[in-house]
Length: 367
Ligand SMILES: *Cc1c(COP(=O)(O)O)cnc(C)c1O
Image (tube, rainbow, N blue to C red):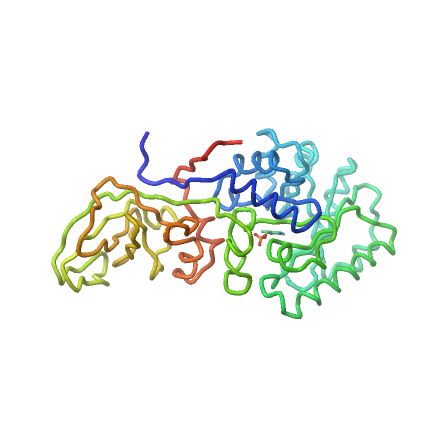
């Protein structure tokens, strides 16, 4: 079936990014595939990452981890957003490592008496997940019913490499490693780095890095770290959509809901077959599509299923033609970075929110 929109995923780019990140870090790599692999497709990217040399996969949810196992992932999987009351038995039977961030979760896992594999998550200054106030009490618990394979934490500002908070978090992490060692627990795997730290903070590498956005070929922050190209990364997702309609309109035409835009001269408008139901942010200002070597900016409000672009005073565009919403920028098209900036957001949110109505097409080949 011919689609009206599609997200083309370049599996070879993901493989190249993994290989580059492994070279940069020099240690094992955990490929972060949570949230449907940042919108790129959980199973396809998970299997591709496994085949491309990723040593681990990381997800937020237990159900994401189980889906990977049931589709043939054999490498270790860590799930880190698994609250008390979760099916820890299922996690263990699928050989999934669980991040433990609270005494309540630890007690449930210990009660299994099956020596479940856990990674202890510590809060080193982000004040989100991980042990903080319960840490001293946790250190006094009985660890004999679990297998503590990892200790980890997460940076809040790794995309601002010069911020002192990075050094503070690293120091705090080193202290918490020592706290655990003092009660006789020396987890073999210690991990702290996300993509930004993997690229810019070699002191924080330990023996595993958890890379998400960079594996998809995107920069954690183009302002502070540079763009994909300068980081040696290749964006893996190209979002395309068809023109549903092309029409010539006179000057003074009010475009879209609320008539927030009015044409200043006669022009050709294109109706693009994607909308906020597909993850096109309604708030966007200053992005658009790419057609025939030119950028055509959005005019008027984004609707649920469609938005309108200004193709200019003359165009070769016809209804049914494909446009590029974003890509790697090599032809001059908008990028996920451009869309992020134009939406008061970040590239992470742009790719992750591409909706389930948009088919993912894997090219040039699957895995
Ligand atoms: C999402 C996430 C990552 C990956 O972050 P990127 O900036 O995409 O590399 C790493 N670790 C944890 C705990 C995460 O939640």
